[in-house]
Amino acid sequence: MFVRLTALIAFVAIPWLTIGSGASAQGPGPVANATVELRAAPDTPIGFEVVVRWTGHGDPNIRYEIWRRTPWDLRFQEAEKYADVQASAVLADGTFEFVDPDPFGMTDRPCYMIGATTGDTPPNSFALPGCIPTQPSMMAGLSLTALPGPDPNSWYVTGRGFAPGAFVTLQELTCHIAPCDSDPLPVSTRIQAGIDGRFSVYTTLPPGDTPDTRKIVAYEEGWLDSLFSLAPTVSVPASQPGAVFGYPLSARTGVAGVDRVLTALDAQDPGGLQSLFILQKLPASDGELVDALPTLTCGNGDSIAIAPQVLPATAADLLGERIYAVFTIAPAADPWLAFSRATHAIVLSGAGGGGYPRSSMIAVNAQGIVGAGRPCGTPPTFYLRDVGTYLLPPLTTAAPASPSAGAGMVRDNTAGPDMLVIAATALAMLGGAGVWFLARRRGP
Image 1 (cartoon, rainbow, N blue to C red):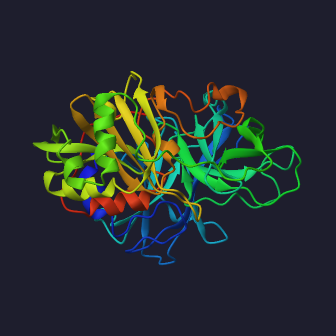
Image 2: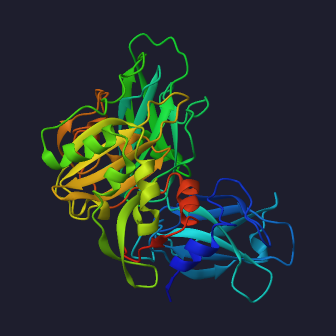
């Protein structure tokens, strides 16, 4: 039986949630180094096994449970207790291993939670090792694109087509097939694909002596060796001096509704900006309709609604950045809630420096502001989705993309919200006053 864990994730998870990063959860039997891997199994019908691995607490009184869940979505979470982990699952090195006997028995591609308990009560600590890695038959949409970043030899890299919730590694491809014998590229956080299989991160390439172009590759943690030949790549110039970053706030588009917002931004007037907010009736976690503004979390899309009492802080947060891009929003089958009533999007970003610029977004129609993405460390390219036509295009040129990448960053009609890449930022937002989780479910 599936159960909704919205309230559990929203109000209980914050102190102890571990996102497969190797950090220990709080409570009995903290779980560390949790991963979901594939292992070749020629004697099975599908040719491989799905293996969940983790490091236990070492306390023999701790009992571990495997829960299966839908791909990560802050607004709505379904999970079910799936199996108890037997003592025989402890390996010689002290780690635990669970081999899923029916890895594709869920309608949605399953992800896993590992619960720890000391008795018959429900687990009071969980780890989230991730989701089943992408299978070859599901890899047709895998692609990478890259846009120059504001610092020398920096790039905004966007991936598509990955497994929802999968952890991804970026590396410079200096060998024939990844992974190469070199360190991953530096990024601000562990990369995790969103519920729609997308991610967008900032990275810098280390100094090199390649004369013309360099190649970046992305691959999921836990892939079988046979899958690495299918890893998507993107070629970028061997060096770039740092892109011109953003338009001044004095820029205008000629569209009255958009320019009214740009004028308020240019005046650095939080009250004037807040006066343009158009609130909607949105469901709170208890189902009650409230007047609120839909906002995007840093990696996972429109999961929370900003309450009226928090709107002044929201307006102030949107000031002080430059204009990265302005575009019309193309119709999409399942748009972000913040985009659903908007005709245009204004993407804002700081000037970078130090590698991890902050960015935000304002969704606009002729009447005013109907959605927002509050500032966080996500690259501004995160917001370049459902793009129809640019009124102010990004002041960068897309690097050549792998053949499956289509039109690069110019148009992306991928449905569904992006991944929780920066989970800590999103969870921190949950603790602020006046935020509600929406119980509106969106599939992957």
